[in-house]
Image (cartoon, rainbow, N blue to C red):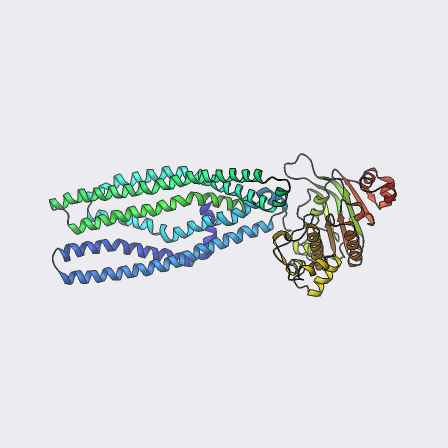
Length: 576
């Protein structure tokens, strides 16, 4: 997966990549050439007392070294640029794919895991690219070239390599075989600790309200200890690898000096040749050290690449139409025909044969007990899910055939759990219409009964914390309603959007809302009877099925389910 991912994301940088490869090749060749020049200076200059030869070859060495430095600097510069660009592209790719996900795919991966995949996992792949372009490219050239140059200096002494290289490979193989499963476990542990921290940060009020601080601290400690344990195991392997490689390098150096000294003493080898041979051995072993660094990171990057690939390869269950309809005639006529919906792997569908019509200029309300499928039904209209049976039509066109932009611009959704983004009141309201004027925003706030508290906060530029945590639940709902009003859509979807409002504010908001939505289709999901009793049409859901449709008076007279819901909230006289 790592190779497939890099092949795809490195393709746009073929030009700079080729330059890096050429420059790294040149600096490796220069590095291999220097010990040979050094041997010439010792054997033909120092031992012969030829100062001119020393200066002449020394000048060549300086020129080669300068060229090597320039090539290395340029290669590292472009290598870092390529690595950072690949990281940027991967993050953008993961983010773009997540943006296409339906609620089904979001639930499958989970927010903590998606955050880890787009940050930590991308960083691991990015690090591999950086090290590969700055270190690993030169390592094979140094290793192979070092062997060739060592053989050129002394064939018999090169026999030490036949012992050293297998020992190194066995050491690396042992460590790598242990690292891969540990790195996979490490990423899963990071997901877990991210999930727990996210829950604790977002649910801090609940934790404190139920005095569960100690319990949550224990949960975090367990997850933290698990991550620590895996990290220690990885660290031990890493700590073992470097001393082992260094031990092999030092023993090899001692062996070269021992046997080389005997060969110099017997007259078959010169001092300069031994010096050069020792440098080539060190270059070979340094190349192995660089490979060791890569081998330490590659297993983790491979695991990260698999996790990133799982996101990139997951197609959304909400598929854009092949030939999208971009223009429709009508004012927001909404119809559900025999709609069914079931979650993957569920034993039973959530919705069964639901049919209803919501007309422009009318308010259609949906009411039912908890778990009856009200929110699921509303989510089918903007295609947060796709129906598994039947169809949802807007102005006579199936929403699965509409271009996503054409559908979403016609809908103003106020979800059951309104979410505000970090920024200001104005920036949040302009999610509905980025071209809205300040007058439009104040008008929407006034209708949503939010103008007073926004003025107290400091006006349109008052700060909003992430998730709207610096405002109350009722204020958050009213700002979300104002955001939908700014859009001026043809279809309003209110998913239990008045539940956090007191009765007086609820009534005032609905009175102000009526003239604003006079020409639009309004679909309201509510638990509170007072919110929907004046709707032109009320649809009663029970266990995913429509069990009644009509006005409040009609349903009170003919529908036992609706009557039970109403009388659980208000008295018989109030219901009448």
